[in-house]
Image (tube, rainbow, N blue to C red; front, side, top):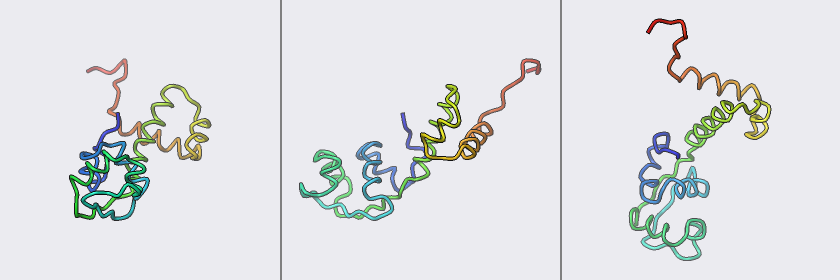
Length: 130
């Protein structure tokens, strides 16, 4: 399950109010812009169309009358993508297949895998004394 820890600060409160999946859908719709939250969204508003009436009402209840800054969330999505790449590679998926699936170069995939290895705690050798 995705976590809020890599989410930009401006989106944490939004995700807390409407859930992470709905927050990411809102970012896809309005990311990089400010969104004014009315007391009640009209039925024709894109927020109601994409998220549904109940979620739009939850958003209004929490942020009514204010403008919220919706960061694009690129780093969050990139972090999630990189974790997925590392998991798939651990399952022996070919680097060329990963590059094709994620629209990246093989060199970029290798860089992601290398950075992930550096972030993991070092593993003791069978012959090291603990």
